[in-house]
Image (cartoon, rainbow over all chains, first blue to last red; front, top):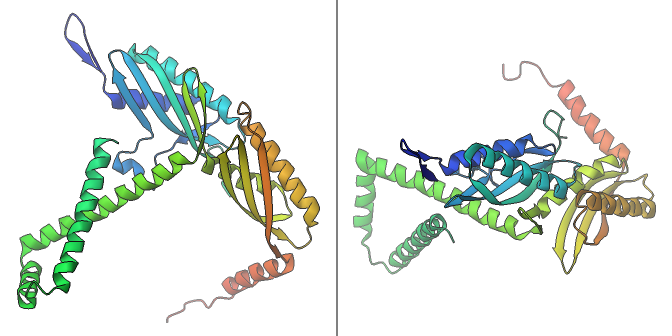
Length: 115
Length: 200
């Protein structure tokens, strides 16, 4: 995603938008982490858990998450959508038109022993 | 389908076609054995050919890994509950619900183990739970409690999704607490009295 200024072109790569979205999602209460695929070390194969598509000044995001055990999943998903949209728009001045959230697993909160 | 997926699928198909053709040629004796052995000997001795074999092998392992990733991800995508928000779609993987049920059951001391299978469809969520109970459990009471707990927890977790939850419980096994304890303590005893400095 690039836009021109008086001095030149500013380019924001999709990976950067993905990172912003991932960090914003992890700030939300009830999110344990980003799900990086069914196979261990899936991130090595490029599965980051966030897919970004940009067109003109619009961004579409697909996010795969791990939620905390015991939380209300639809509510967490809505909070994630709000937070991600807010942060992406604030940091990039792009419009996040769609934030699709997919919850793949539930886990106890970080630090709590998973029996 | 994305270009990346097409490339991986293409490589996989090409590999299997090559293997198939190789086996057919072998079975029809179209390649002389001496020539094949000579070629293998050459490949074994020449450094560059061995390096090429190493790269091909590593590439095949990577390809297999990617295929597994794509296939499992596809299965998991199919097994979801979805609903739409103004900001976009939200999907909850059924395996997440299975995880959740397994963790919920740890609250019930009468249940030794539970494995569940969640199916979403026809306007309802069906949970098939296969449980292993301790022998001191009162089965009708415990199974009813399992149904109530699973249903209420799923409804609580997915409030906003108005689909009725049906819970089918199948008691697969009853385990004696004493037996399990004995087995556990026997294992611990073996560990405790294991011979020190073995192998000397």
